[in-house]
Amino acid sequence: MTATIPQPETLPDGRAALPIRLSGGGLSLRLSPFGARVQDLRMDGVDHPLVLGSDHLAPYVGDMIYHGALVGRFANRIADGRFTLDGRNHLTDRNEGGATTLHGGSEGSAAQLWTVEAQSESSATLTLRMPDGHMGFPGTLDVRVVHSLPGDGTLAIEITATTDAPTPCNFAHHGYFALDGGDDVTTQTLRIDADRYLPVDARMIPLPEAPAPVDGTRFDFRTPRPIGDAGIDHNFCLNGSGMRRVLRLEAVNGLSLDVETDQPGLQVYDARNQEPILGLDGRRYGPFAGLALETQAWPDAPNRADFPDAILRPGETYRHRVSYIFARG
Image 1 (cartoon, rainbow, N blue to C red):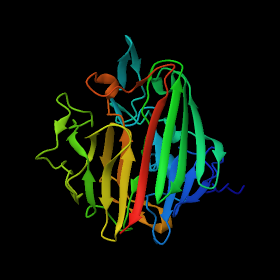
Image 2 (image 1 turned 120 degrees about the vertical axis):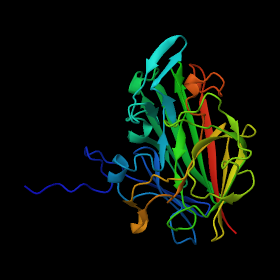
Image 3 (image 1 turned 45 degrees about the vertical axis):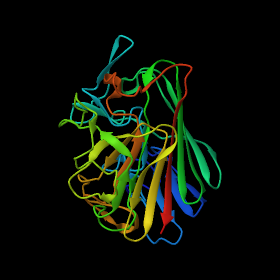
């Protein structure tokens, strides 16, 4: 018998996840309903992708599970896979070293096949229902995400969610950005509008004394400077509130990326632990191949009353907006 060869747009279990192609404002986007993920993002006149990705779905079931995906229902980490909500204890899937819940657990939103609700030339709406008890979280959560290319080199993402019971709710776009098409991003210049950050322990859980000032630390990016290779995988406590510009990334080729969001936090990860893998256009990704920029609530917020609230309750609507704005100098 001849073995069936998996197709680029088919999951291992045989389900199809046909890509959605969008264009507008000088950008073109390939979006997969598996994980509501950005597989590829291009800019007119630029000869390389702007993100790390793959032409095939298979890597996204393995080492690239979070690349380009919408992660949740609680992005980042929950210490010990446990929290107490309204006097009730909850145990969640400890999918990171048996010690923490990472990005909503092993079957979080990045591992789900979303439903395509609507699509136009420059916009797509995807939905997902996460049932009560899924990965240990309470409440049936209905999530909707809109990816759009509204113009002027902008990728806009808007996430909303409702629930029938109180639950942690914190989604993040987990894209890895690479502006110059090179092997690493360490020489790219970064500015972050944050006076504080969250120092973490060996499990990447915020320390009791967090947040801490960035002043005098390697996390001070208030003035633009190269990313470097010292290692960053931390939440920056963003200044201000409402929709505002919080970050600028620049490469020597003249490309820049500005990030605008209404969220209180931004996880910056320099991919220093990226295992070698084959990506878009046959590129080989290794350590520091891209920079993850995840606007979000603060990690472990369900266990920290001193952090911004990340609990969604019935009758409320979770809203998260982020825009990635690309330009050429």
